[in-house]
Length: 172
Ligand SMILES: C[S@@+](CC[C@H](N)C(=O)[O-])C[C@H]1O[C@@H](n2cnc3c(N)ncnc32)[C@H](O)[C@@H]1O
Image 1: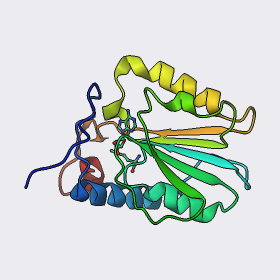
Image 2: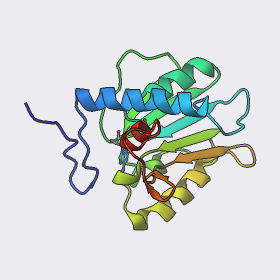
Image 3: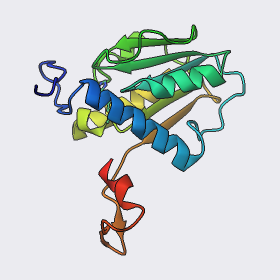
């Protein structure tokens, strides 16, 4: 059996959205949380009311953050509805394209917008508008945006040798 893809016309994101990919993304989330020591690095309010995860993938980040911040409604948005159906009451998932649908959220309403590893679905010329929209959605003065994208990991200017502990991170 082959891979399954989102099939949305006009969107360039080319990774699959099937079960093996769901599991890979779940593992990535665990690795990221473990590496950084937390899902959230931004110093957000201890009692946030609204959090958005753009390009949520497996939804694991949303479910974990909803468990930590019971005061917050935590929304995960993605091109593909692959997230679990059974989630905490303060978590929800929406299908949406970050390059098209962010305007459907209220401006100045979010305590935190998290965006990680979405670069394959955002063309170079779309980034400025994307970042501007994210900042418009944040609560003035107290809202935070947390972006995380990968670059090729290098070791002394060379690709990491496969016998080095960091090699697996560069393969994620
Ligand atoms: C590599 S995964 C990262 C998932 C998650 N953010 C994480 O870090 O574990 C990229 C996710 O972004 C989603 N995505 C890519 N382009 C998107 C877009 N334009 N709008 C919404 N979601 C997008 C994909 O469907 C995929 O689930």
